[in-house]
Each structure stands twice: as C-alpha cells, then as structure tokens.
Image (cartoon, rainbow, N blue to C red; front, side, top):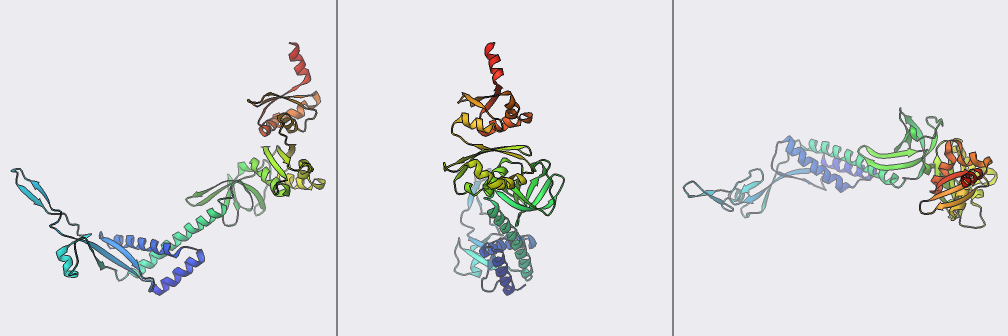
Length: 370
C-alpha cells in the first residue's frame, strides 16, 4: 500500500466509523516506533514522522550532542591520587560533539542531530501496523458508543428480542448490544419463546473488557414501577406520583399511588376504563396479583390501605420512631390481612416501612384480661 492509498483508506474508515483521524495517526506512529525497535533490534531514540501530503511514514533516529570533557568526574586511588573518570556516553542516544560536527559543522552541545533510518520494506510494516491500530480503535469506538447509548438506561424499561440462552441466562438483543437476563431474574413459572419480544428492566450497566455489561431483570420491583409509568400517562405529566412498590415476584405486588389533583382518583386512573390499563400490566406480569394502594401522609391510614384486600382494619401507631404499628381486624379479615404464608403483611410492611403486628379484637381483649 503506497502513501496515497493509505490516506484514502484512513479517511474512509475514520469517516465511516466516526473515529478521530489524528488519534489514529498518533497511535500508528507509536505502533511503528515500537515495531521498528523490535524488528530492527534498535535501541536508539526513535521517532516516526507522518507526511500529511504524501501519506508516507519516516523513521527518524535522533541523538543528543554531548561533550566528553563536560561533566567529567574524579575519584581517588588507594594512594590518594586523583583519577579522572570520563563521562559515560550512550552510543544509542548520544553523539560526541566532534563526531556531530562532521555531519553538521555548526551544531552545539545539547542540540539534537537526526538521521533518517527508514527501512526499504517499511511501507509493508506501516500498512500492517495501521490496520491493527485502526481495527483496535474501531473496537474501542464501538464500545464507547454503546456505553454512551446505554449508560443512562440503568433502572429503565427496555424492549428486546430473545436471541440465545444457556443453562443460566437468556441473552437479549437490544439493538447495538446484548443484555444478560439471568433465568433466576425471570418471573417464576413464566414461559418464553426464542425470537419473541420481551420487556426487561435494566439493573446494571458497566464497561467490561469485552464490551459493556448490561444486566436485566423481570422480577425486580423496578420492573413493576416502570410498567405502570409506561402504561399510564398521568405518571409522566405529574398528575400521579408513585410513592412506592413492594413485590414478591410471581405472587403479589403492592403499588402505592398518589394524585396531585384532588379531582382525580389515583386508583381509578391506574385501572382505566373497563380495566384496560391494569389489564396490560397484569398480562406482562404473567398473572401476578397487584394491589393498588392509595398513599396517605397519615401513617395509620397508609398502613390500613396497604393491608388490602383486608377490610375494616383499625390501625394504631405504637412507635413513630421505631416505625411500629398495630393493626386490629375481625376474624373474617385476619387471614386476608396476613395473607398466604404471610405475604400480604410482609409486602405491606415493606411498602409502608413499618413493622406491622396484626391481631384480632378477641386477642387484644384476652391480653387485657390477663
């Protein structure tokens, strides 16, 4: 490849891949300097120059001019006689003034003398080094572009295609990158099909040695949060505010919502006309139950709402500092308040951030009679 061909190829690749031309040239020059020292066993100070007009590279070996009478040192022998130690000259990087003057008569100590040492076959070496550097820069540029594209997608909802799977993971095609969806992060008991579209929640994005690492989930509570926000426009315009989500993936979620407009019912807005809005969310959650909880600034009221589907709940705050509360229910609502395997009270506690104790009135009366 001659210089003109190299320039055309360089400009074409840099434009196509959006790579800084100067960065590539500097990287090629450094690579060529290293290649020259290795292939031609040179220990000299070497610099590679690039001619922007011809596209040719030149290898320049440079030497610092020194005077062997300057910086002489002295030592003393066993008899106390002074011995002059001439300064050490590094022939690979330095040249004596008297030798330098043979090449450049008016040169002075401390100046640099340069000699072109470009080998005859250096064009081939340059082409190989340039190809390697450009390939590396393309990889780096593509990694940077992907990181820039997905760097702000953490905690967001994305749609991808199920591309591959192995024993532990599904691999989701997200366009310019693939995300990893561990099978343990799937909704329990859901069945998916290769090649189908799938919604995923991004839990982590970081740069890796082989490219960006994008970790995904469908069982994270954030998945439910983003599903509601994407399906219900009132969250985007600020009419509705999501105050919290507590989730036991595959079983039940509790979503606390609040309306900034007193004329708009937050629960009804989430359900939608004839249940159309909530239906699309429930379909995505593979049948997982969702309790919509009306948020209240009053902790007792909030806890009461969070214990739904239990009704006729009376809540008293035992300790506001320790966040402890007592919920009193009748016998008919006890099992509903606690839930199967304690799931309802567990999620209500998570949502409200209160430790909730549930008792019946009969239990309280018995305790009072003791």
